[in-house]
Length: 274
Image (cartoon, rainbow, N blue to C red; front, side, top):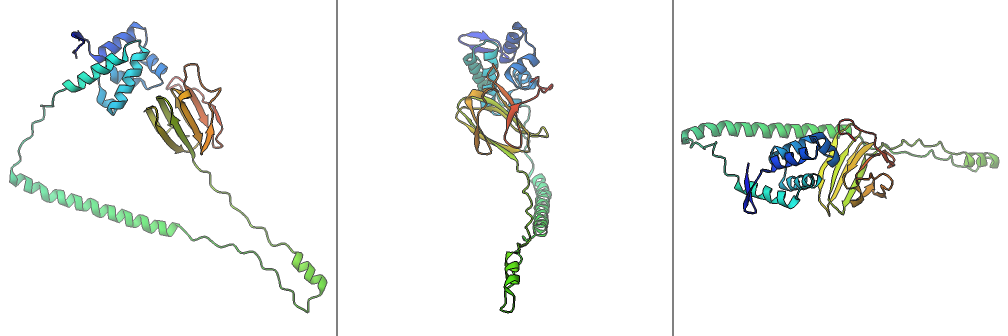
């Protein structure tokens, strides 16, 4: 793909990125490690497969960071991307065929039957769920202290004193179940954020803009990766936590957060080269 830029022909975004990377002697995996992103993201940029990167704001953010890493002009690549998105023509490979009114009438009845079937299935599922919730949620059992035996006029004074001083049976308190750990992030500057729970399930991942706030919760220990850690204010279960001493020289931070809210350096992950 070639575009006109500043009055002269310019190479496409993908070839220019790939050429700049190879000129610096970087592999896709090496560049991805420096940016703390998946190598498939950079591969999509070099292939100009922008649809695989999601919304337009994410494409711009990844393109700017990649250009800065390769020593290229982010503004120039932004303008190339704008021009490329504006010059994409409509897809003429799919030509709509006008359906005959009789064909449409034959399709309407099956479609209505399918919609009614889905509606009945959803209603049945909701009714079964409500019934299970009513059965599973039992009312709390009230706890009563053992009453003290009353002292009648015929009770000897010494026996009344013993009855009054007899302590009631201690109540057994069942400890509450452990809650999920909740993280709140306030971003003063743009940063890559990645949060996963104890099972490795991704709770949050992406390039977050400056001035944004994000919240995620999951089963601890939680793994937190920040590309621009000094720009992120972190709260764990509503308590502000500092990452001092855990920020790397490149400004990133890779930490583990246990069920007590304690923060410690995260062990390496071979899959991402941490």
